[in-house]
Image 1 (tube, rainbow, N blue to C red):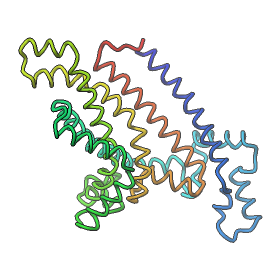
Image 2: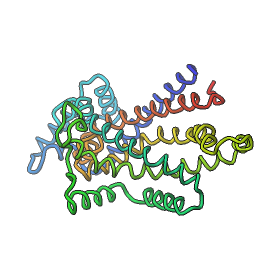
Image 3: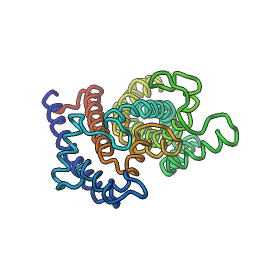
Image 4: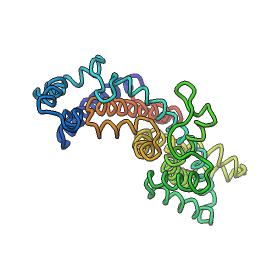
Length: 317
């Protein structure tokens, strides 16, 4: 297991290097000049050229790439439009996205796993058809549209929840205050909609697959109660693919957070990414991409190790 973990970390560095090159090339191919955007309207050519020289945009591309990467890792490069360090602004926005992602995932798991379990137990029943239909709608509906509908219904029509912002916080967390918790509900529900749909469908499919196994038939033939067969024998084995999927949803959570945070004005990393792209702040865009990719890779590794812990038959050596 140790050798496998070391190999995965080595692969992670290769992935991050390739991603950094890809993001850098895409930034350079994006229309517009960062120096012009930062200089603003009415800036003189001399001012624009001075900004280009200050940011190193007049140097060869390999030198620009090395300057950007080395500056990120030694902390010397700064987020130009935020007047602070790149990692400073990223970690300032991190708690908001972590809070949103955790609450969305908790909501999704609390709803999707029981729904998928009941859908599998009562297969081809009205309950099953209802769960699969709602799950299909959840997967098909864009997150931003779900957020807009929740804002319209809960915030405008019934006026029971605030529609934007993060509200009052204590330290870096908002859920610990009533106002902050109320602000968290709409974006969490919107982001959890896709996660709920995916996990419910996977839980149902995994349970149906496990229920057809021979050891389940043997357990029933021995006279075990149905709930014992389901909970003790079927449910645990059926959860292994679901656990894997939850780990893979780290990237899905951030992708959804970009749209959710932008729609609901939630001040997290997703909204920061959109702001940095619009302002052509290359250091922030690259720093965010590397941070999120590294987080996702570590999450995938943890899920793989937990997968082996749940099912001892799985080995990686």
